[in-house]
Image (cartoon, rainbow, N blue to C red; front, side, top):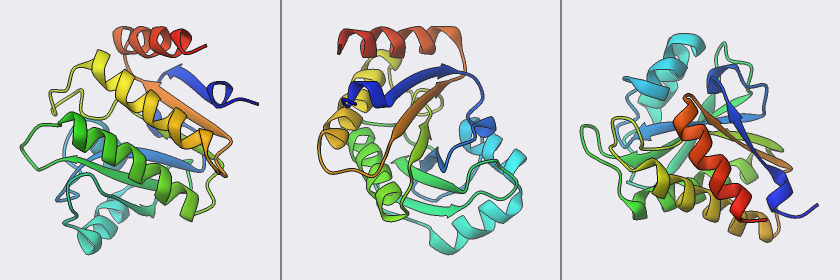
Length: 171
């Protein structure tokens, strides 16, 4: 199976994914406020924030792993794409995506789900987000990897279409 076939674009709620790990679009403080992080805290429970409080703050572009509380996943990988109250840059998005994959490898993760990091409160354009994240994942999967399936889970039709269109171009 080629790298491209290991990626699937899904429309839905990332907190409902039955995967080894879901990725949180985090800030460097690891405060689970709104957006994806807020949904993870709400469904996963305060235990996730408590673990984040022990691990944070983290450098911009870094990623750390916590348990997943009440979520269906085993782990939450917190990808710090922005400072609290800041915005996401292409560089921080690329690093946060890559570091999430590295943390997944360290935990022996076979299945992982990513949101469109930084496209909400982070203000990063969805089109460029799809390009940076998909290209980073493809590059990672081209190397030695234990990851068998990468899902991009998009909450709305517009983001789903953008990610799907970009991945389809990679065939």
